[in-house]
Structure formats: structure tokens, C-alpha cells
Length: 61
Image (cartoon, rainbow, N blue to C red):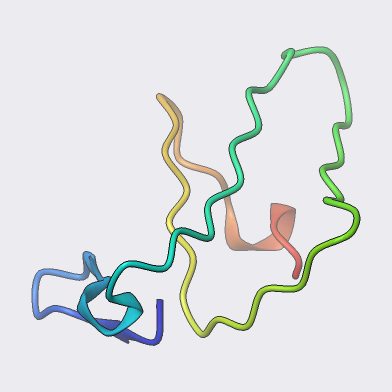
């Protein structure tokens, strides 16, 4: 997303009908990397959903 609401959730309204979503489910064994191929995404914010909060140092884009 390019914007966030005051409650820190991402604002997807500017995407209109465009669906650019990547889903990766962690195995939970050691270091894991997700690198989609044959696609390009421009974004300012990303939403990570997980039972445990990741630290900022564990994320890169």
C-alpha cells in the first residue's frame, strides 16, 4: 500500500481493483526467504500477519 490509516492499518483504496498479493506461509525451520519471480511490486508499506511479531531487523525489501 502507499498510505496507512491512523490506526496503522494499510489503506488499499488507491489500488482500486488491482490485486497484487503474495502469500508465503512459514515452515518454521530456521532462516526462510521469499523471493517472488516474474513480478514487480511498487509499495511503501507492507502488512505482515503472524502469530508472533517479527522484529524490524528480520524484514528486508
